[in-house]
Length: 198
Image (cartoon, rainbow, N blue to C red; front, side):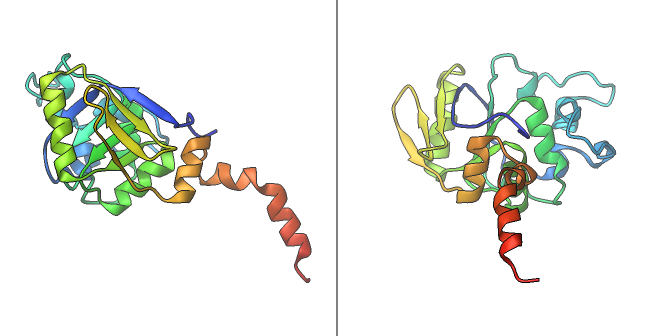
């Protein structure tokens, strides 16, 4: 498997209520030299997390021990900018398995789905409720049910459905990337090839 299966995620969340977060902010271009998906988490939001002398910026949320979890909650238009897949790699490598926003850039959404990060798009109103719940209680639990395609605020029971491509949903439930999927249906492909006229 390319990554762990994603079925039901129950976790606290890290709030980043900033709109128009682009991929260069998620992972600055100077860190794109590696070709493997490891080590990028160290530089996730690098310029927002650290000063020029590499000391942590105390006011940035990832440096605040109050917040933790496998869910990142971002503002509207998350993942805009260049198409670098390293942005999704950095989010996954840091430990996030889900990003919630009211809007995602299409390429960023696709890159996340390819590596096991679930982008959950909710209404602006429900996004605000999530931010309010985290502000009220940093230990609030959120439930992401991929099979049911719902995100729920555990404390209130309020939930909202989200959309996902059926093929990508099936892959995430199985922990497959595109190559895993093709390998899994290898015999079907071979049988189809044999049935074709020469």
